[in-house]
Image (cartoon, rainbow, N blue to C red; front, top):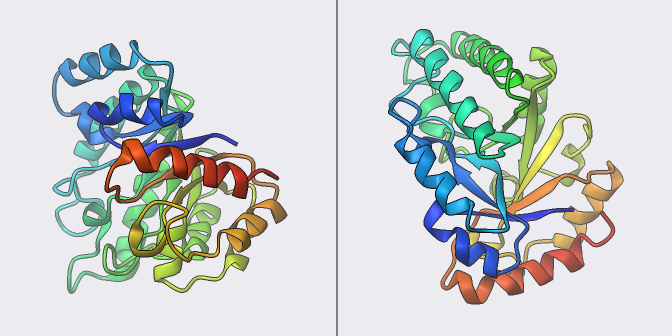
Length: 255
C-alpha cells in the first residue's frame, strides 16, 4: 500500500523527506482556466524530487457551481477537460471530487434537480477523465462542509447509479467519524479507489483515539490495496510526518 500526504507544491520536499510515497496536490493550483505557467512550475519542482503527485484533490473552485441555477455546463466542461490533461501531465491517476462549495445545493433549490446535475457532471467528467486514464473519486464530506454526498454509502449509491468506470468513491476516516458512519459501509471494493486519513481533531494519524485497528480491518475485509493519504493538520510536518508514516505502515501492514 502506498501512503501519501496532502499538501501544496511548496510542501513536496518536506513530504518526500518524511518518506511518504507520494504527494497529493490540488487541481485548482494548476489554474485550469489560465495559461500553463502553474503546470510548468509544478513540473519543475517535481522533477527535482523522487516522489510524484499520483492523486489530486481540490478539484473545483468554489465559484464553479455544479448545482443550482448558476451551474454552467460549458464552463465545467472546459475546466475539467484542461484539468485532467494537466493532472495527467504530472503523473496524476486519481482526482478527488470533494469540492463542497461547488456541489452544495443552494437554499430552496430542488434536491432532485441538484442530484441530476451532479449525475450529469460526473458522467461528463468521467468521459473527460477517461481520455487521460484518470479516475474520479467522490469524497463524502461531513454535513458542515456539504449538504449532499455526506457518507460513503451515499457516494456508492451515486457511483453505482452513474455506472461510469471512471467514477469511483473515496473513504475519509475523519468525515466517517464526524457522520458516525459505520465501517460496514466500506463494502463495495470495486468502487473504493482512495482513502483519506486523520485522527482526533483532524490531527495527524497516530496522535488521537480513532479506531485504526477497526478501520484497517474493514479495508482488509474488502481486499483494499489502493493508496491512502494523510489529510490532516500538522504542527510540524517535518517532525510529525515520519511518525505518521511509521504508524500507518504498522496499522496497514496486512493490506
